[in-house]
Image (cartoon, rainbow, N blue to C red; front, side):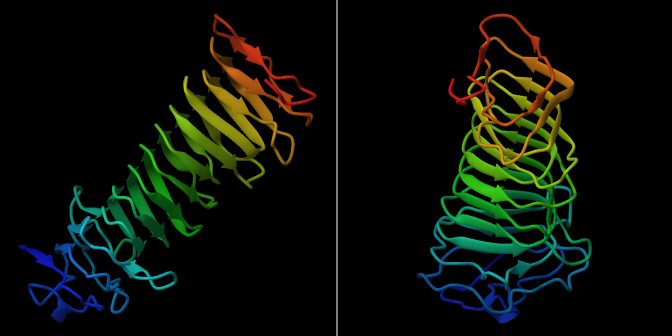
Length: 275
């Protein structure tokens, strides 16, 4: 299927406003390229598709919003295993994966703009730059944060694997979490979350809420001094590496004595929380 482009200055994503006079269809490859600052806010719900689109891309030159809060673009992006949605633009994109399977195989936040996810399941999520937000109705299976900033609201379905290389993010759900760089704040309201936490050298994790961190391997900084309630840390596995710093704070956290992996280990003053 040929690539279809939304017509310049279109405020609607209806079929007549696409270069192929069709636009959204099963297997479609769609591009938003130019807008002259005019946002696309009408005719954005295509949950009627059964197979889903092959690709949907917002290019750097699209300097307007795509959909709006509460009325996002809605469509599946899973016509094949390589199907994707990519936001490279400088403005806001509102999207919910909905339709035959309520699924998006691959999503890329690759521009300086902002992504707002409003439901559906996302198998693979890559955030390179810009801002990224996922609401409580959005399920994310795997996510890699190469940079940028954002927040993922609470959902009972854990992330299978979250990896962060850079950036600043707020995460409100459990899963296997690896922080290689940047700052990740955990604020998980679940009273018995499943959390496997690895912090590599250069990574920083701030804990506001995360009642139980069963497995912890720390080579960076783990800051528990701002926690809203006590945390049980390392009940199954607790390892502190040679460059690790653990900031305990004043709460009575239940911290299992760690296995020290050699080198220099730094622990904060438990009364002041300072390092």
